Image (cartoon, helix red, strand yellow):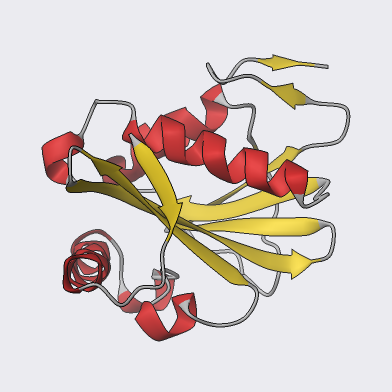
Length: 164
């Protein structure tokens, strides 16, 4: 699998993002959808990556800088044709490694609380994320879960195991 920084100009990537945004409307009310559209993913402070496997778009993920020491994981998604093949695991590992390289001490994320988001929540827990209060302007919402991972004094290995 090849993960690369993406400029969001490819038709396949744009269609994938639109599918992601539409899918959010199937599981969350509009006021609880915090996924970024293409224009917001292009803003300064946001880095966007795509994962490719044998020439096929397998997934995507983004990292938004909240503060020089804090980042937020945004727009994680695996293509339905690549589910259960480790795409999300690899993308999350990539984002954590990039965050560590940038000197971030903490990562945050917001995800849905509905059943459709349970696999993502479990993935984040497996990497050591814990639940936290809303951050960066988010408000309490029964449709949202907030999670964080402290990166200081933590080494994240490729399997997602944590050792301090």
